[in-house]
Length: 134
Image (cartoon, rainbow, N blue to C red):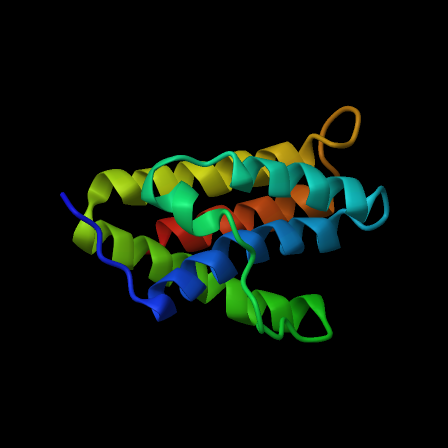
């Protein structure tokens, strides 16, 4: 199958994926938000396929808000919308997007020794639920 994405579609995918890493960074601020963001970003830029081409750049001009709640209000629906959009065009790319985001949040959560904090684990659960809501 062929995937045709508008500029708005690409922005939605970028907002969703890069925003998920930002949410994990916010949840991991007590440890090292910078390490969380760095490791999650590396995972995103390591993606392949159509998703990999789109996620090579972070979204530009997006205002995430001033609180984690405002960020989540934008990112979680964008994750669901991204999955719906990709499933309609190419289920394999939808699976690729989901897998890429999951790897990014798992990588971000592993920047701490041992298990992720309860805050990070809960944020990862919310991100996964948004991906699976489509």
